Image 1 (cartoon, rainbow, N blue to C red):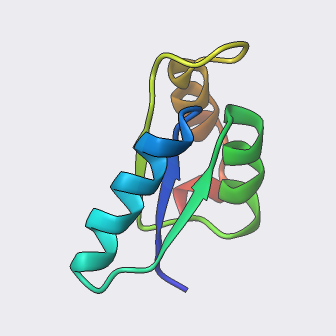
Image 2 (tube, one colour):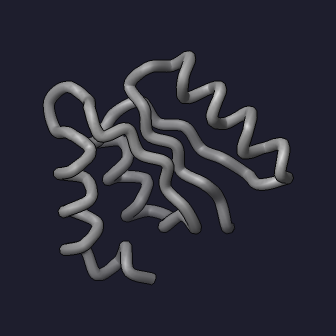
Length: 75
């Protein structure tokens, strides 16, 4: 399934992004942390990722590095 993965620790921002994406008839999935994002990417790679770079713990740049290293995410 083609979808947009929205990763943001702020639930309000994540919901606003999801609402905007769905205006264009795209499906979206919202996760609120980098670990959930990495799990979602491994289970079902999205067509597009909207990623907050400034999150507590593992930041968005580390998620980007994970995506570049993960052969499953390249599909």
